[in-house]
Image (cartoon, rainbow, N blue to C red; front, side, top):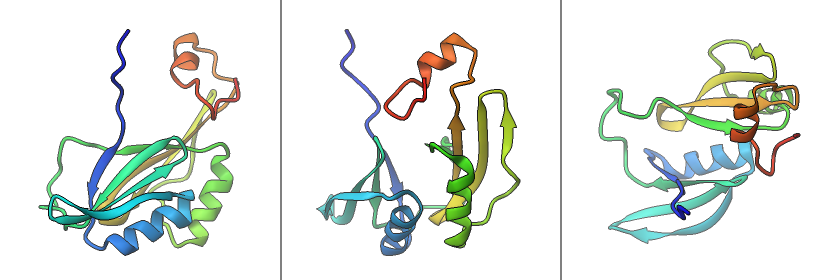
Amino acid sequence: MNHSHLHHAHIFSSDISKSLEWWKSNFDAVIYFDGEMGGSRNIFIKVGEGRLHLYDQKPRGLDLNAIHHLGIRVLNIDEAVLRMRDNGVNFRNPVRRFEGWSYIMCSAPDNILLEIFEVSGNLENKNLKEYFSDSSSEF
């Protein structure tokens, strides 16, 4: 049995206080650590079951890197979008809806592309149902 798992993404932050507030106001992020590591302030937060580490350093460049986006699963995409719009978040397109699946894209601070998505109990593909099965599942 493999006991390894992806634990967190560690992201640069040009304004760590602004980034932290953004994650708290849009996704109810909870702080678990705020201190110095490796010569810079680091903040470890949980967003639901997922984890992010904010690194108090500006991104090293604006070029594309190997990460395309971070996926944030929500239980009700329409409510999440309304809440985020109320917080000043701009979305690239309207919510795209498929059978059992909906998503919308936006940018977090420091131009981090996010996919906000919802998976419903109507998802028929058995492999995808298993893949998305977690504590936020409706199935």
